[in-house]
Length: 423
Image (cartoon, rainbow, N blue to C red; front, side):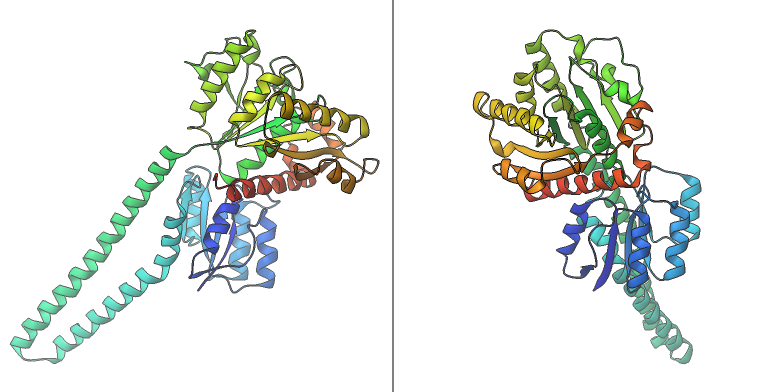
């Protein structure tokens, strides 16, 4: 039984590995580097650590590897790198990392095969080598020419087996590379739509939710679908393009935020809402083939009919509500319009309470008011958000409390997709 911990920001991987008969997962997926060391201090009887190099934490990946080896040098580490890096790769190989993979694009069955091959292939090789040793010893002690010929034939037979075994390893590697390419080609992204009354924090939540998915080696697109009061570019401190939206050349409207996150903007250039709806939905269906997650920041109330179309094509809708009496009243009225006027199933809405503080309505009362809906949780009010917005939200995830809240939301969303068999 292989004892394994995962620290990759991917609950699906953790849950799928639990289903394997010869694998024992010792904890939930660890969300930060220091969490690995905390677990190892209490339990060093671990065979494998599956690790994401982008995992957040106050130590770098090199220091983490050293600390793991100091605790238990026999633990085999499978590590996912963001992208090829010769310096990091050399360091990892020098420190006898068991397996280096890229971009977290691998099927569960292939990962299980890598783990299982650790024992099976090594044992096969050991067995064949021992047999060869015996044959050589027998040949040396046997003076009969006929027997020597027989033993030589046997030696060739076992040597052929070794060659065949090595070829199998090479072919398995080629097959794994092929599977990675196929998995990438079949990738269909998930659409998460954020809706709610004005001023509840949809834009900042959209950006930080996107950033939380970076730690799972995902490619993320944030769409600014608020073509009246668009603000994502202001928060991020970027300039928008001057070209109009074009579903035949949508790359004109994509801005690179970093190596994991892009933003789709400039849809305010279209004044014809029907044309906007048709073009944007066409573009989203194409972009699903490129991005793992598409996060849509919507207009609050002016384009409610347009928003309803985005909700319908989304895999998950997050309805954001403030936590005072006036804002809750606005939220109830807005939900009523979506459900009764535009006939959207109430199961489509997942509630998040934002800006929660000591003066807010109690959480138990909020749960009663929104009892007909699935409540994801709440974000506490944090004064640092003003600083993040004013400084273009460049360093939001340096704040541990903010990062922890969004990583928790990230995990809840992934569990939602797993539960509904959409991931």
